[in-house]
Length: 208
Image (cartoon, rainbow, N blue to C red):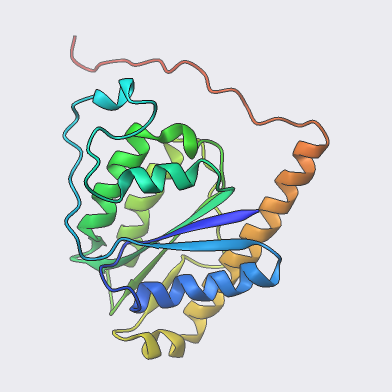
């Protein structure tokens, strides 16, 4: 089993990465493989709503950034962790651009797979940021992995994140619960319990 983790920070070894690494440590102890994708500092396109991905086998028509690589890796992943710093009380612009496109073009690769979000902040804006991230997941029938509090850590530097003992305990719980759910789903599949079949979406416009 493998969990794909996406670091929505341009800083490869910053606060968000520190949180993801802590979760990865727990998953490794449970025998689950992880991979952290660094979104880096290169420019990432926004979704322009062109709809060309409908004829591109679940891939985005723009091939000059990391989005299609994420979609491809998601196809063989069993679960996901999305991490982001908090910028002006919302997730980073780069993680929003990525999620807009991977969930529009490659949603089938994520369907019904467990997912969690974790955010890092110096002080505030954490719950608002988590709310934004959760909306992507709930739109796609993904079971959300929780802990004993909202998955946030506080600090301005990686060593400060590690001093947030409550925050560290919370995200350790994310790792433990993700491992438990993945193993439970594996047993269910072996017992012949299949994932639900997606239904055809009914779209109702408010203005006719």
